[in-house]
Image (tube, rainbow, N blue to C red; front, side):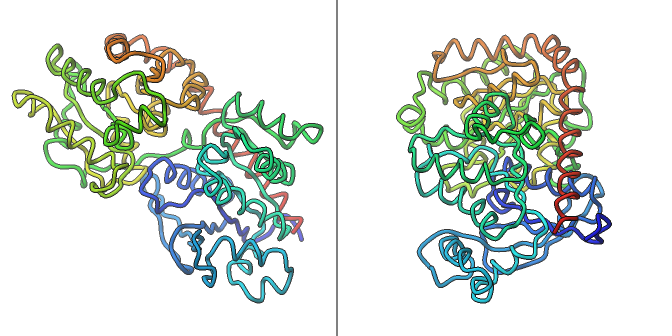
Length: 438
């Protein structure tokens, strides 16, 4: 088939846009919008957590609407479902017979290329066997059905179980192209590949969310916050703070599961009180995981609790953004901040990529890697290492020196955005080549 193919059918695993996690949604939007920019004839099908097949029109950057097919894919023990991942995996081994009995296999067989981004950081066994299998199986299914596979920029490992590690190696070695999103993951990728490493196919890149566009949310935020954004005063800093519901709402997990030395609630309360007491800044609490407020991981619920805990005399300077914004709208809001601090990594990427001086409260090494890519490694504060007061003082220092931080970020950003654009271009070229061979 010639390379003038009228439509290129692309499947996308590991970026379900229905998770309420704006980090995963950012990867979905960045992939679809970014690749379509270079390949206008691309038609995307994304695997989500619902049932059946549907078509939805997504509004990404300002004025950009793209129609995407959604295909259900889920775990669990209801093996009679066409969408059951275990069932699909089983049928993937039976050639034409598998396609005859399973509709999802038929859809996969029609793709020219399969992309897989593993939620950015889920291609590891540290989250348990069940989670690992849900991430590795789609890759192995694509390979079994002989659909060209491209692993988009993501982290690799660790793999503590040798058997699971071998499955990961199998997926990586079978891919037609594989990208790591930071230098450390690239070294792991090279180790996984061994003598199969090929610098033409295996690349070190940056997180896809650096390419995410923004779209105004003025119509969705309440009037006081909208006025604050539209009437920003250079003498009155507007500070954005992302609070992780996962940590704030379950402090015991912070200690037992993640090994915190510092008290996360005290960090958030301590810095917020200092900001309101010692400066004239306005504080905007920004959720990035939009779960229902009754769920533990809800950032919105945590932000509401933080706002309620602050002294009454400062309430007119405290704002909470709604949990109805999508990934592009949250990025727009974050871009309006004069300084930003986030715990959710993709909330900080939204800020960094728009040149906002940014700090992170990070309990994972992946955030450090992202910040180092931007020359901002010193702005990452790890509650596993630092005590509560030391971390609060670190944030105070970062805010106080935000002009210097911004200058360093401004100098580094063009190179990062250039790398993000280059990797999109290279991936699009690879998709075009692979589709022409189908």
